Picture 1 (tube, rainbow, N blue to C red):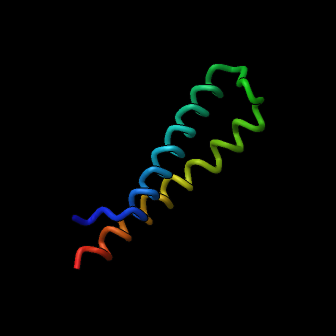
Picture 2: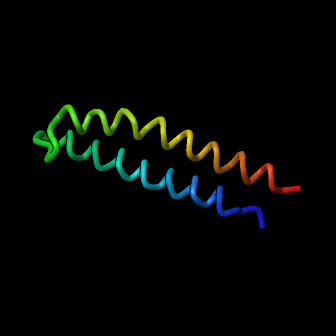
Picture 3: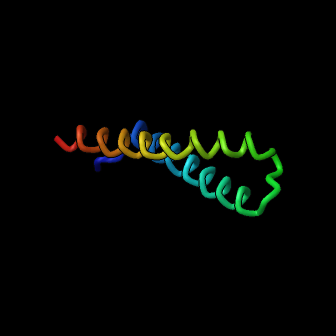
Length: 67
């Protein structure tokens, strides 16, 4: 089994940040975000690269443990 607790945490982080990105997109497209436009845009701007980083880290960790 290649999934370690560390890669599981990275995958969980990727899921949470992806959900935050999708939610931010819906909030911004609605027109009046609950947290305000600036805060929602900041969350969107941070969550997109974090999703990629967390996913990349999870895949890298799983590949490192394939031995």
